[in-house]
Length: 293
Ligand code: NAD
Image (cartoon, rainbow, N blue to C red; front, side, top):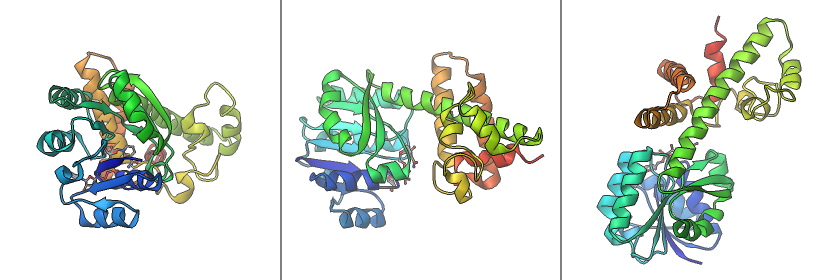
């Protein structure tokens, strides 16, 4: 088992650090929040005084930070130089493709191997160790990161060169947002046309309209499997995070001149939903906004 630094112990990183400790690794944990550090201590990690201190003598560094600016600051200010050159650097935060590539280049210029490895799966999957990791970087970097990621997830997939993990993540969430809105529209229209929502679910979930947003995450209480809709849209994937990912997707689309009209409309709708005070509400709760008339 290895000595591993985990930096960023929030909703996601806290569960990931706990799973690495559970797997027998010597986890050196750091977060700006004293409360998060205490939770990591209770989960079997050793709290460090700074990100740089956490990186001393480690075989791997894993970061799970809010956004690109935090990732850039932590790597340029602390990790690069403090971690041994032999350590594999893994950023699992969801950030923009350009920053992921830029930090990867800085790490490479300093003599490190780095991969971007964002995740699919929310807080429950981070706690249960069932995340999906999409990894961008060299084949050698992927091979070195994979054993650590396997201790925190159920699927670890090499997406391609540096930045490809973030590209896969934003494209996946662009698709997810559009399919959720379409699912909400169809369920709302079906009800207004007099169909029983569960009957419509029974039909569409085995027809060509079937998709994950309907089949596995039906956005109406009492319809399909148990989902956040059955818990008043609490838990699950916060709408504010979906909006963040959609903005990253639109920025990425603009950078390569890709046309994403449905993605643009989904972003407007999630923006309105979040602006109305629903940032913490599960992203399937947008059905309430679409169903208001
Ligand atoms: P969070 O806000 O709960 O945790 C982020 C942590 O980073 C906080 O504890 C914060 O104190 C810490 N932090 C910030 N700056 C720091 C610094 N300079 N040094 C050390 N610690 C620092 O966020 P989260 O929900 O854990 O999400 C983390 C990342 O994972 C985000 O990029 C998010 O988009 C992505 N993500 C989240 C989910 C989800 O469901 N929450 C799902 C998939 C991906």
